[in-house]
Amino acid sequence: MAPIERKTELTSGAMALLTLMCLIWGLQQVAIKLANEGISPALQGGIRSAISLALVWAWSWWRGVRLFERDGSLWLGLAAGGLFAGEFLLLYSGMTFTTASRGVIFLYTSPFVVALGAHLFVPGERMRPVQAIGLLCAFGGVVAAFADGLSLPTSRELAGDAMVLVAAVLWGATTVLIKASRLARLSANKVLSYQLGVSSLTLPPISLALGESGVTALTGTVVGSMLYQSVVVAFLTYLAWFWMIGRYPAGKLAAFSFLTPLFGVLAGGLLLDERISATMVAAMALVCFGIYLVNRRPAVSRADLPEVGPNRPSPAHTGLSAESSIDKR
Image (cartoon, rainbow, N blue to C red; front, side, top):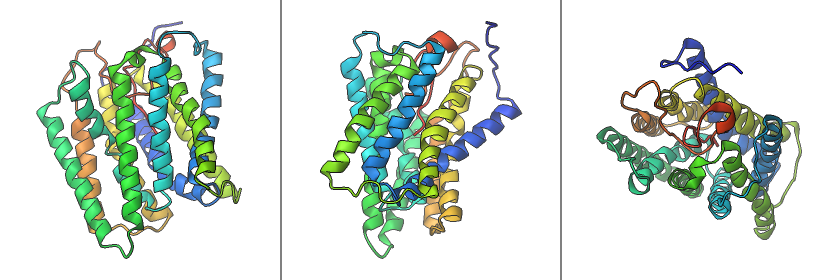
């Protein structure tokens, strides 16, 4: 197999693909809300994980990636899976109370949790001043979003906002756990399998324990929304991201992630007719700018690949360790 040609700058085609991927990720909160109309939240998260897990296993088998070798990662993997399951439970439940445009803003505070957690727990990852400014911007955005929620007629949105914000903290904690442990040296497929496996096994029983209604309406919209989350978001863009990270600098790819909450807010307003106030626009702008600053990297050499998050490609097939990717929910 010919060696992959790595580039130091993003091409116009790469930027177009990145923008499309951010749009796809931004639409996920809309898909969750649409699927919630026919499948209860915890069960929806479990089904989504099960479908994605089957696809990842099939891909791993086809690529010859070994997932079940003993490597001492079991308990750490289960811990990462537990955090992932908790994130999904809170995210999917929170989206029944808040809007998609509000939810995406709170969910994408996760990069700031990662920046702070990595500063505290990952050797060699000290927070730079520009990242601290990014954290302050994000905090301002969260305060603005909560302040906007206080003007709403009920407290439902605030309850949902809080649940999604805690989900973002759990997402960030999962990333930090992976970056700070031996999980960072595993293949992306195995790390992701831990997360999807635990959530697919635990969320359906949790749904029963909570007395959720389960599947109430399998309309075309509900089924399409589930497939969108499971196949397009969790699998196809996963593969596309790994293809790109094998060819372009990871830091420059990650800098585009600020577009995701922007597209998410616009999608909520355009597709679900959600109210988007001036305060929410300000909150979105602060969070997006903060994400850009946190992901902004100092100049690196051609050989350097900055680490960005937990979903990682297989080193055997991309030449990358588990430190070279980003997680997309």
